Image (tube, rainbow, N blue to C red; front, side, top):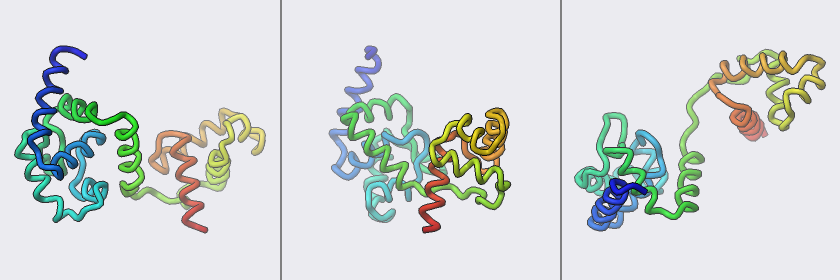
Length: 177
């Protein structure tokens, strides 16, 4: 860690020590989230109502660690967020990040009906963890054709990876049960 990082960490530690328990909790939880975080999201993550969060948010804003962006809250500087995040045990930071991802509402996306039958078939096979080569063998096409269809699926569903597609397929199946 550089001398500047050490000084920032010491300043952040001192500032955190001056905050109430709720404001410190808010700042520490917010540190695992990159970019803006909406007030309803942080409230949901902390299992509190938005109204109950008001004093802690006001105190965090007054501390100078967090600022309001118009669309949510954000650390005044990424170095501050990083210093707060480093104050958490790595396993706790990872668990908080997982909670955030799990609790965050999924953005609306186009549905299954936007995919052709072939794309639906390929999506289901990706959901079964098959490789492009395995899918190609199953449907009687080349791996390049499967890759083409996957790019079309990603574009239509606004997703960027096989992992996201597999998750999307599994979530869709769970909802239909």
